[in-house]
Amino acid sequence: MKPVLIQKNSQTSALYRQDCVRGMAAHLAPGSAQVVVTSPPYNLGIRYSKYDDSISRQTYLAWIAEW
Image (cartoon, rainbow, N blue to C red; front, side, top):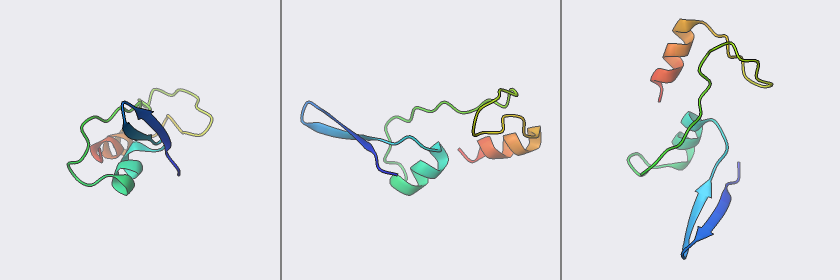
């Protein structure tokens, strides 16, 4: 996935829209992030178009333990 590049005050930032766990593993060196903003699904049974938000509690807790 290609990032959206944002330039401000002679600095360039890269914005990635993807799964945060996979994206950070692919694009960041350990300890290099100063800020990470995410909006995870909260497993409340919401009907998303591409995500099953009704997984088992055990599966959900294992997934959030990854990050």
